[in-house]
Image (cartoon, rainbow, N blue to C red):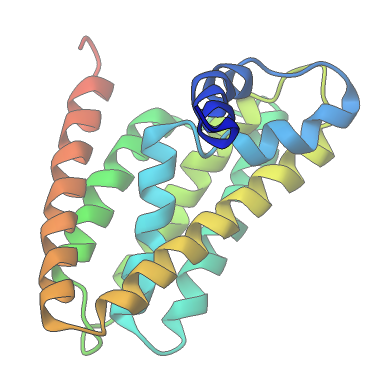
Length: 198
């Protein structure tokens, strides 16, 4: 058997486990921060969806929405690291997937972007707050924060690329809307799981 597939298989099997186990040492903060958004499905879906919706809104929103999310996420992380309470942050993360999925279904260039910008600010703060609370004591908070800011920005860019590619063909645009329905459905499941007592 060729070696490349073996190494690929080993990476697939071992990387998620090693990413979830926070590494020790202050120099591991950057890596932990980079990987943390990727292995949380709610974070991953929401952050890519921000990029997709930004393209659908068009114009300055292509940078405005991701920038709003990252700024609010950083502020929320600072609150989390300071152990300041942000009620319903976990519920806000679940709701972000649902709302952004609906955004993929309905967003277009002629609609006002400001309600979505406001929601993105709120959701970014929720995501950041949970990240801030989860920073392991063994790592540098500054490096960890830098890591998940970079990781988030990369996921936004992935979403922008997906959105831009979908504009090339009508069937791709329709497929993206269908994907938005799937995102919204997964968000509804996340919301149900985040409800108190569930």
